[in-house]
Length: 402
Image (cartoon, rainbow, N blue to C red):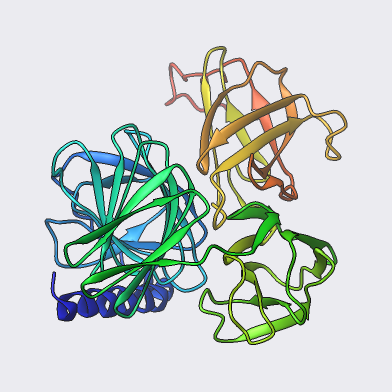
């Protein structure tokens, strides 16, 4: 793939993201056309998507939205917009965590090893049972089964940092083995070993996600001996072009107020501004409640024994797991039915008495925690079938009062 083609794909993906945002206002007026289905095999699923991803199947020229829970096919190109993140889980055990501004192509099979091409940005990869190869315009990294590495493409350089197992980094016909805790750079026709970072980030874990709580603080920690004058840098972008905070790094820990939702990057640098640790990001997902769609307030639900009653609510960005709760009390004291669901719809068998019931929904992701509940909605449950209206046998007879 030429550099011009890569730049074209990046531009088209960004333009498609802007166009999608502009089209939201028309969505209620213009019916959506069916999206083209890829004809290649399904190989992965989107497990995390904190923003609307874009995907271009191999059989099409245009980009379309890609949401959490959707399938990924061979030859799909996936773009992560600014401020977003994504996690893809493959059927062979491979896991890819894609950072913002990243463009990745899932290559068709080239043998036993899963292969992806990183055309822009950065990503972390955990190799499945047959290994993982990450190709870039500047070089490649081949991970052994179970190995974990971070791959970052900057201009015509690719940097690979191995955190578990081992990887082979290649460029221009050269190759070098990189073990856990070490890193290397591929550029042009050579592979260069880079000094290991002297400081290890410990808390929170890489790619940590949590619901945003106003006023709450994020605890950052690191191990090692930072040199005199070392600083903790905090930024909203992975390149640290705009550093929002700098703190003294001598204490081994820091507490940052969670000022707003979104992605935050952090690292340690020397007094001269050179990185002495890896860069990590954490994400604070806005804690908002879903809006209830069905059943609506005051609706009558006829559900004879064995009926699956449909429930629906608005999905939340970056959230896929929800808990549906029902109670006979508006204050939900007690909760008399609670079930977990993936997605924003559910079908529930209600083994409840006839009468008025309240329902609500909240986010309930394992990696995010429990979100605030929606406003409750009341519906009337009827278990027995409503009798049909009586039929008049002689409707032509008129009765006149005396």
